[in-house]
Length: 288
Image (tube, rainbow, N blue to C red; front, side, top):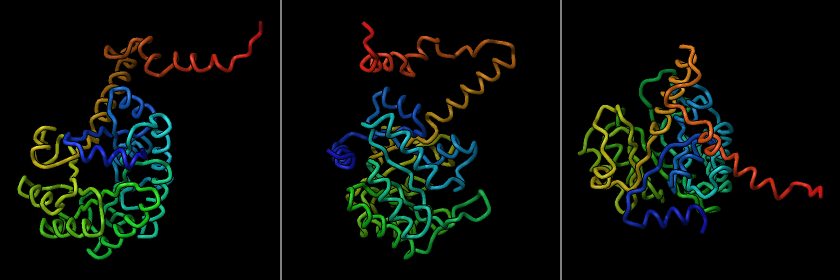
């Protein structure tokens, strides 16, 4: 089965799908080793990892696609939802973006309706006019036919244009053939219900990040609300930053390493030194 077909099978099963956010080979390896069958290549995590900054549309298609290929190489069996962001341009850019991720083995790709380039502010996400947003999703769905990659259509318009417009856009994206739907920044459970109702039979995704204006539901609560997929953009990133800061503080204090550092043997095991040795024996010259 192809990655998109495997993801479709998961979507037809009753279980809630948990997707940790990954951004490089190490995070992909850790998630796979922990037993996660799916993962989200998060634009915010790629921006943090590559640029050391927030996700404000500053990275290029080439940079995030390179991150995807790193993830795919290390964890080839993991089903990856790739963050296609705004498609990196107009509808024709969207088609190129979707086709590239489809050929490279992504199971699904997110395309959203915000304006690019982003206005010079970190606040708010101004969105495209409705019909221009429609054309982007239409282009994505058409481009997906080559590989079967699933299209996740996201609207960011709720904060600027209201829930009525957001629900209308979700219905429109369903009409265009989007496979998965996402309402960004719902204000309350009533707005969540509107979005899930607008998606109809199509599965809805929720971003589960602590610290948002509204309470973040648990996995069980999200499933009961009607969501099918939960992505966790900070689940690995936040503790990773905390751990690195602890390591730096330990060095500043004159210590060898932080108290929560892995044992050297465990670190070598996680990184796969023994796996390398096992594989390399097949290629060593026989000197006997």
